[in-house]
Image 1 (cartoon, each protein chain N blue to C red):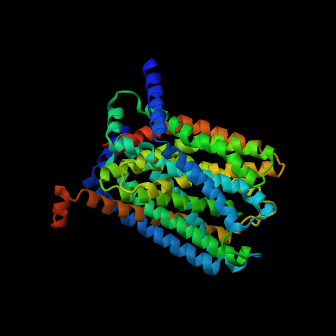
Image 2 (image 1 turned 180 degrees about the horizontal axis):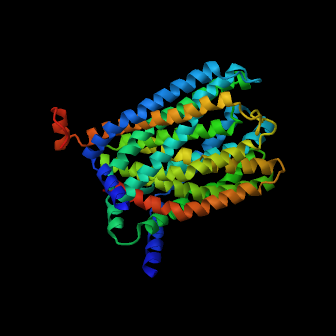
Image 3 (image 1 turned 120 degrees about the horizontal axis):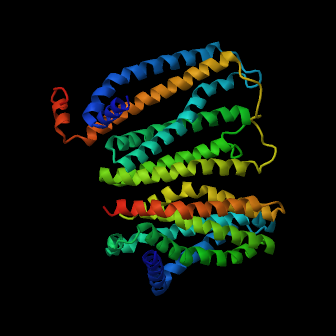
Length: 225
Length: 253
């Protein structure tokens, strides 16, 4: 169906263009990620062994929070200026449009986090092989987080002061990702077999890619009634 | 046969009908429930033999196990009725989902609290992150909180119903994943198997009171749910004629 693909590409392009015009929005989660990662050594102390121990978990928690922070704006401006309504009326399948917006969100927020994460990991004294595993888990994990978060963002889009609520909805759902992401990196750091975690994260990403757009679409419809 | 069943359910879906039928049903669920719990609790606390290892501390299972079971059961009931409400646009199903959430959260809290109280003498700590059931129960409580928070922040009932239904269904898909991931996570901690799997078979004197309490708690849960749904229905239909007639002392039309 060419119409569907055109709608998908057009939505993604529009979102990317909008993000490029407002580079601040794009940078904020990244800076937030770096700042949260700085807080932990300051709070815990500069001991190398401890930092190595907590590195995987801290990086993952910081990435999760940075993703959450950026989710609020996913549908907000479109909702406020009425273009979300136009997208709903466009006659194109809503899951595809939602997926396009989610892809753009991931490209602008998730992917940069994956690229910046090694800088943080190096300061936490993680060895290079472990950093590669960390990037892999973050790559798969942020895809799922964008997709899960889109459901939450769509549910809370019309709600006044929805930011705290959004975190309340998305955090419990994202806990399996955190568990598998952080533990997989920790296993790799301990020279143990870590492939199970990668497989799980990949399976989760595929599952979320299949199911989440429909939930997002249903939520967008409900929020725009 | 099927037609009669369908007609029964269609009638049940109509609020005045439900209100009437549930009034008849309520004592038949509540009274056996309280009787079973009274019998089970008395036998569990006073008659059942002491555990050879845990002594009297094991007796908390007569509250803990039924609560833990109902915490998950309530989530399932909530998610399924939310799904029915969303797919078949059945208003009563949404009322059931709305009514089930606080009760489910209460049982989840009860399961966590009793588990923690039991853990104090058994594990020597109020909280053990290494136990997967405690941790996944805690995440379940968070899921309930999210659901109730979403529902309470949307003032339009119809919209709140649908939005929270989507969340309940997404949560229901995630509950097994959460449980599985927590089990995997704790299996990495070595040598903390405080609860030996496949331990000695439970004594019949301990088992029957437990079964009585599980069934009894379930029936009490059912009666609480029914009561809350009745209130919810009255509130939602407060501008309808049958509620006004009811409030003025007449029989529902």
